[in-house]
Length: 194
Image (cartoon, rainbow, N blue to C red):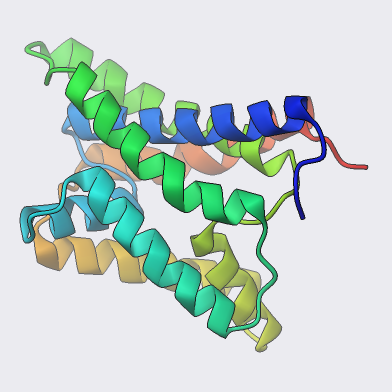
């Protein structure tokens, strides 16, 4: 599962970078974030890791689990671990926390839409799921429904992040409402199925 042309590789990398930018936006919005960002922020607060560093470390651990489950991975899986975290940190470095409540609301609203677009770009290349999706796939092969597997993974991240002190709020609910439709709407534009 490797990209066979430069256009596909470019789409993959741009998608993963947009994903990281969206994660940075939701953190700067400060109104609550998606379950995994709650976890990464909480882990960052309790360790010397940045939020992006926590994203990378979590991705590596999940990649090990995915490989142990025998799920097929690809270039997209590996680049997911390598690119999203540093891009999140770069976005946080470039964007100061907004001084205005309106800007924070805009960041919070835009974040899952940007992540959805990024997801559609990288998923559309079909070169391997992200590590979190890989765990979901591995559980599904073992008899879990996709819905139960995904919910369990997201719930683990959310409650783990909540215990660690990650930020939740109305932005968390918005993320859960917006992310699925954002991916579904964007994916047909970028799907490079053979």
